[in-house]
Length: 409
Image (cartoon, rainbow, N blue to C red; front, side, top):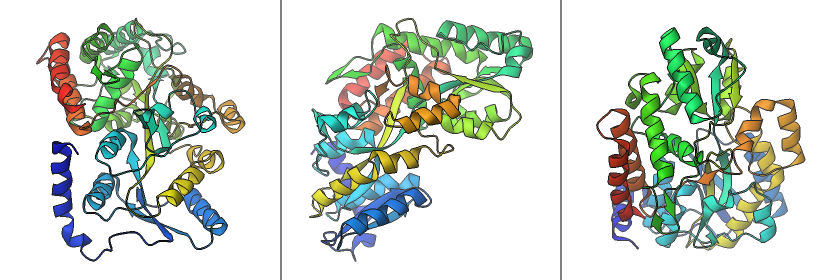
């Protein structure tokens, strides 16, 4: 167990010790406890929990709904205290951390299971050639543009930018011709500031870590950070005050020309009077094809409950093509389908706004896996903020970040 993470686990265990005192050391033999993130259980999951229980007499799945902000900490606290839940909804970026600290069990996939997903999805849950979770939610990003603002600025409202150079030029023209922000760049001290930047990295064939080697100090990533610097003057003022959902709200209010956002923005835009379009993310000069950051959340099966095998069976059932297809194709959830299927094809045909979110998968990349993910994330956020605020030049900021994140891998 790494010293840094072990210390964090002990602290969490101490914080939760009072609440845990009345709990038994292991989950009941015939019960799979599930920490379920959110405000309520999705009705589709409720439906399939009942179906699975009906097929498995004597077994019960007991979800505990925990708010997003506390969800992962609670799963960690319970595991650290020796009272793990059977299964928990976690960000896939944490799987390496859990695995290296011997808190979760592998959830190996057959070749057939791996091939059922879109390209690169399985990579988001893979560490040392082993899968450590089952993907349950997936998101990608695309470029949204306001056609009326484009027209007002003298741009073709039906032609979105296809490259970074075109995107920066369009943002500049919008700002200078209309006084409206051309682009919405989020740089708040918040996890999705790092996510938003990684979309630029993956639309320029870049990487942060390759195996166990830090490769952020590369021409591809430097170009991405330089593009951030170049578009900042034409973006929403005070980027460090906004995270991506706050930027999305500004776009929904008709006060910014372009943003990158998930499929949930399309569902919200349909309820507005905004004349909008959605297209693949613009590409950098080194791009090999349409790309995006591939963010997945997963079901992790915790070690020491005595029901690990059955929890794996249930996790694979609830995320199998039938149940998963119903869960993710609900529209407003902002999820991208995990697997290709005839049902997805029908969905895209009925609503073409979904196509860019799927097209970016082929050349997309996973969230980089680090032992100390929060340390890595904070270094990335600081790097972005230092450039957009003018406190550092891109090359210097990248060198500083490269040195810092070496310790977190």
